[in-house]
Length: 433
Image (cartoon, rainbow, N blue to C red; front, side, top):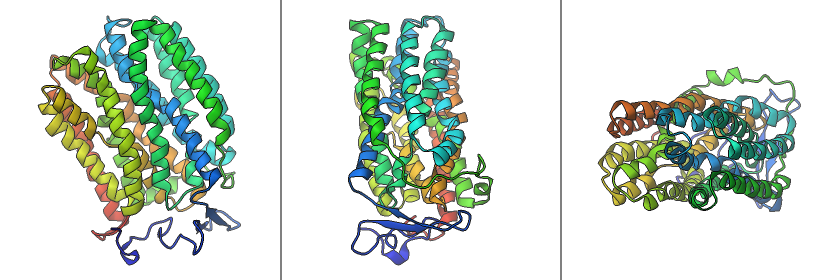
């Protein structure tokens, strides 16, 4: 049961219960003095337009960020076919570049979203991501794949990451964002299975082209559904330097810097690890799909729990469980059962951390910029984490223990920083924050 209202910690965007207007399913918040003239923003918390935005962003996440979750299939295919002469660490740089561009561009695209809205960037990303997949289907050399799938597709996906649901929801914000990001988990189930089958039946080029055509059609339906509603903010700096003087935000962004060093490694290496334990190739490639199936449920569930019990209260256990699952379960995996258990323990950090960032943003019209800053802080770990893991794996002669401990330690360090952010923002031990 949720704690009584008086036990809820005060937050920059206000108490959730007090935000509900009597007789209406709406939340209101007053913009601070930095946004003259002061106006009252109403958060519908539902309705056709609000949920249409959630559906549209869900479909965009399915066809954009979902590809990032499926890179493990490409990693295995490249290692066994196109890029046999390259190390696992070198191949993982393709996915790392793709991911880091997606995240590091957030500091620019977040501000662009606050100023100009969503539609233009979505259309450009739609065209660029389709073109990049087509070029990937024609690529045969390492540098060509890096340019097409790493850089081109990374930029295209970045242009399609939208925080529009934060304009329509406040009390239900984490749940709405959880539903949106679960789209990436759903495609992380479908794409690995689809691509693995298509690689065998029609070959690599046509498998990638089929995915490109599929994404193009889905995004054509999704983009018209997405529409921001808060006023655009002109004349603001690219980076909100004042945010770093807020202890909660600073500690939260440190956690966001540490977590990605371990967060994405399992998606890169779980299929190869499964093969190394003696699992059949048929079962091994399902490991990525199983991880994403767990993420599909986990992201929606953690969003609901975050709104009910506090976003920071949920984020900390997510990181701790991720660390435990890596160091206690993954390290002891010897067969299918343990590997499946580990894959189901991977937590949904991205959606709940974005909601936590929005929660500690005083001015809602700067949510895009603050989330963009948080995403950029995640970029170094995303870029180097899987490659560091690959180097550790190679140094240990294919023994995964060092890689597994590295993942667990980084997630545990992130949990420590997130715990500090939670206590700084709400010193009371038992409160909703």
